[in-house]
Image 1: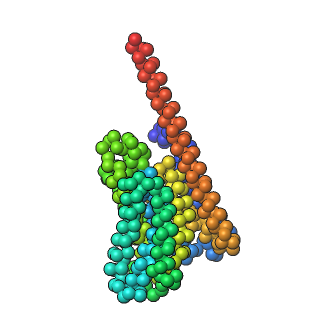
Image 2: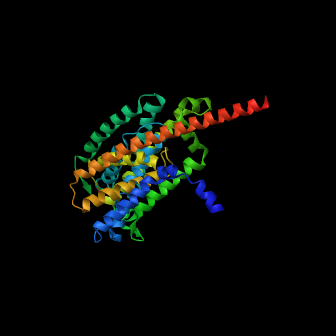
Image 3: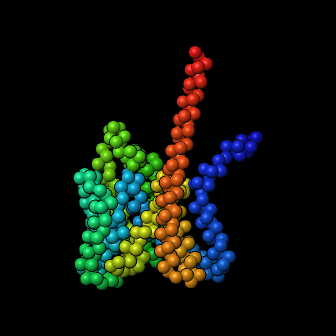
Amino acid sequence: MKRIAGLKNFNSSEFFQKYTIILVWIGLIILYSCLMPDTFATWRNVTSMLSSKAVLAVLALAIMIPLIAGDYDMSVAANMTLGAMLIAVMNVWWGVPIGVAIIVSVAICAGIGAVNGIFAAILEVDAFVVTMGMQTLLAGIIVLISNSATVTGVSEVLTYAVYRGRLFGISYVFYYAIAIAAICFYFFTFTAAGRRVLIVGRGRNVARLSGINVKRVRFLCFVASGALSGIAGMLYVGVLGAADVSSGLDYIMPAFAAVFLSTTVISTGKYNPWGCIVAVYFLVTGTTGLSLMGVNSAIQDVFYGGALIVAVVSAVMVSRGKARSGLKAALAKEKEEKQKLQKVS
C-alpha cells in the first residue's frame, strides 16, 4: 500500500524538470561509450575530465553567488586570470614564497570584487556595465604586469597540491571544487546570512521592508565572488604550472552556461551549487566526446553557446510554470475559502 501511495504521489513533470540534464548526461555517456569504447570509456579519460575542468566549476560558483542576489559579475574570468598571473609573477619573477603569493593574490581579487560592489551595490550603478568595464580594465592590467608573456616555472609545491597529487587517480583540484560547492550549499541552505542573500535575490524591496541591509548583502556577494575568482586563479595556475594572458578569459561562456543550467537541475528555477557541478561536467562530457570524435574545436563553442541558450530559455519557462502553478494554487485556496464561508452562512 505504501508503494502504491508513493506512485500516486509521483509527479512525472516535476521529476523530469529536476533531472532532465542528468538523464541527458547519462545518455551522452552511454552514446560516447558505445561509439568510442577504447578512448572515451576509460578511467583515464574519466579522471582527465574530472580533474581538468574543476577550475571551471569553481568559476561557475563565483558567478553564482552574486547572481543569487540578483547581480551579474562579468569580470570573474578576468579576475581569475589576474589572480593566476599575480601568483606566477610574484613566485617566478620576484621570488615571493608560494604561500605568500597565493594570499596576496586572493586578497587582491577580493579587493577587485569589493570595487565592483562599491559601484554596483553602494552607488547603484548597473552591475552588468560596471563588471564589463572591470573585465576590460583587468585584461589590460594582466598584459602590463606580464609583458604579454606566458610565465612558467611556478613552485612545484602548488602544482602537486592542486593537480599532480591524486586520490583514486583524480587530481586534488576536483575535491577542492566539490568542497567549495559543499560550503556554498551549506551557506545558502542552513545559515541566516545565506537566507538573507536568497531573500534579496527574490525581491530587494521586500528584503528592505524585512529589515535586511540590501546594499551590504550585495556588496559582500561581490567580495565573495572576487575571492572565489582568486581561488579559481590559484587552482588554474596550479593545474597548468604557468599563467598566460588570455586563455583564462575563455572560461566566461561555459561558466555562465553552467550557472544557468543549474536552474534546471535538482532545485529547479534556482541557482544552486550542486546544479552547477552537474552542469559543468555535463558540458565537459559533451565537448570531450566531440573532441575525441575529431570534431572541429569551433563546434565546442557552438555546444557551449547552444547550452547557454537552452539553459536561459529553460530557466524562464520553469519560472513561468512555477508562477502559473502558484497562481492556480492561490485561486483554488480562495475558492475553497469562499465555499466554506457559504456553508457557514
